[in-house]
Length: 183
Image (cartoon, rainbow, N blue to C red; front, side, top):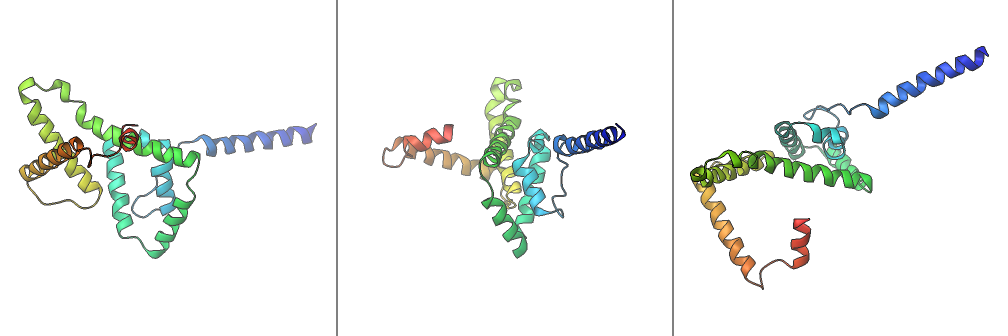
């Protein structure tokens, strides 16, 4: 009976410790100096990353991009093996994290649109576009030193080219590509 109670106690403690490590939130790794495998796993494969505020997620992505730009040969091999191991549920979580980041980033800018007076909405959209492009450049580690006016003029020229291309049957993307984009 004593052996049964002793083994039972050890089993309960073991299950408790195991459950803690399985069900606890994944701790955020150090993005600048931590193990690259842990950083990639946390960023791309955990839901804890999605629970962070959008500004913090964007800062962490920027830190990761900066680190990847300066990675060593050993980090390159590690990253390649990480990417090769993505399949099934891991690939689905990667897609979820990327989609949620894009949606939350755009929502960050769109959430205040209804609060803007009718006469100031165009100005608000222009400012949101400028802020969004600056943020994306900073995340990518390649901020450009151009004025807001130049940035907005570039965006409007690109929108005109895109509208022209969409109206030309020879230049617009096929329906399948458009469907995937909207999905």
